[in-house]
Length: 161
Figure 1 (spheres, rainbow, N blue to C red):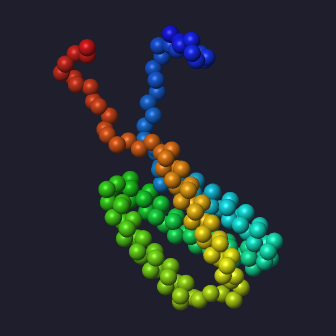
Figure 2 (tube, helix red, strand yellow; figure 1 turned 30 degrees about the vertical axis):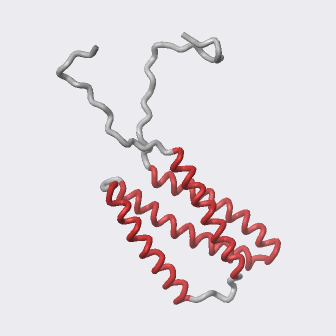
Figure 3 (cartoon, helix red, strand yellow; figure 1 turned 90 degrees about the horizontal axis):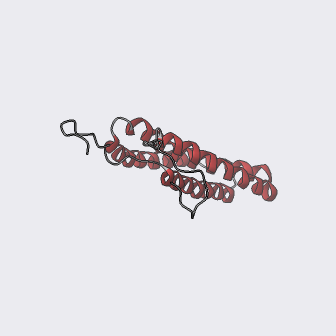
């Protein structure tokens, strides 16, 4: 029976499909966020090329790619640990966050800034990558289908009413 208020095909007696949980949440978020941040870095690099030439492009790309690597590590850990131990993934996220912050800081301080690095475009590329990556992750999480409860199992002892 169809409603007069809405146009469309008439409803039938067919079964409605079940939508289960998202298969690979973390890898999907990684792909979505990487694509969005990569596209934003191309746009940022184009602007940097206009204002400061190839030095600006390399600097903004380096800042953005460093941010992307930082966030990608977390999503990969979520993928590999979250499948077998979902509740332990959060603890591992926190632990790896501190390792990443200290590790990246040590690497950046030990290597120092290369001579070709333009500080302003490095910062702009990093900030653009952070904002776009986080926005893409939020969007990806909002579209994810997470199963919170187990599906009810029919009671085999009582007849269906």
